[in-house]
Image (cartoon, rainbow, N blue to C red; front, side, top):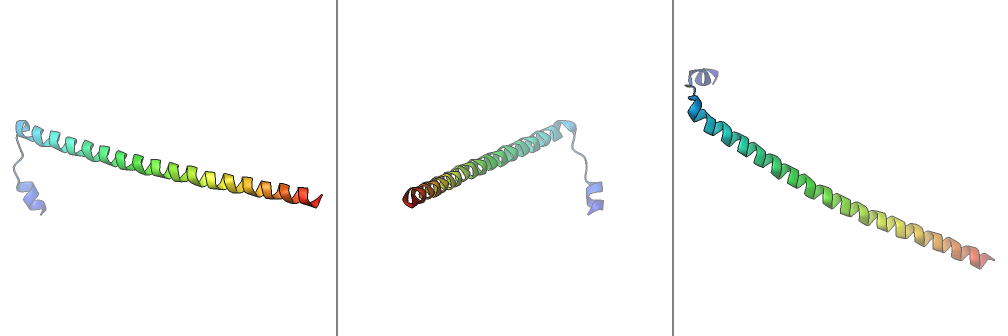
Length: 75
């Protein structure tokens, strides 16, 4: 395998430039797609976290109201 790579002729610089530019374009596109996927996941996680915080807050408010009702009925 190494012998095959060593015997392969090098591309002239004027032809290799197209391939290098193409490789950079593919890399940048993959990077943009990756960042987009991560941003979508982050938005979903933030939405779920806000929902859970709302549940926790409503439960805490409900427990406080129940404690207040017990104190009033105990008097």
